[in-house]
Image 1: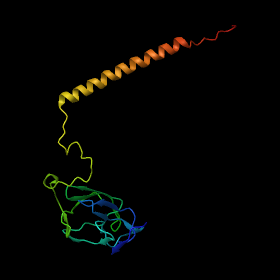
Image 2: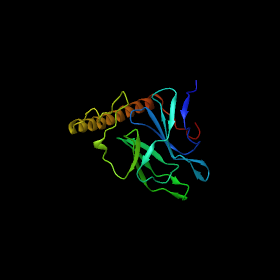
Image 3: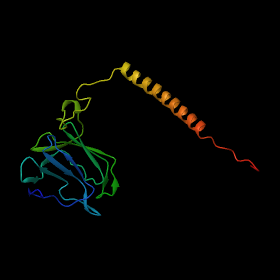
Image 4: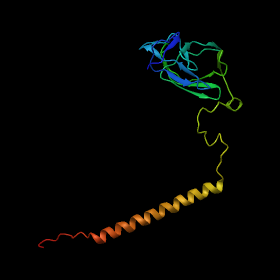
Length: 181
């Protein structure tokens, strides 16, 4: 079954990025192009997937809007969508910049020039929180023990492999052919 959506459906595009919103209830599509030489008209579109039918919209955006990239990457860190590199088709250059979009306010997204990810933790949508988020840490003694154990295990495995090799060679000797025999 194909999901039904309403609202302003974004232009068809290629080489764009998409990320999940902060609560996994929105899909944010950014950038890309719709023909070999032009960027898309609405460079940022959002699909709200909280309720059916799903709803497309273009959010209010403030701040200094960067040029629309293609062939870029985007990731969510804290309450920010970080957009890196790509290609700017309108100016025909490879983009060396990083852009930061604050997506923490559902009614208005804002392009910003800096952020502190520690001040705005992102909710963890995963049922398997990362080891760092759960406060788990490895002591240096445990780390040294693991390294030494791995090293000793490698030595024992090598010795075992050599013993099997020597046993095999004794069981299957190869005769060296000589002239006349």
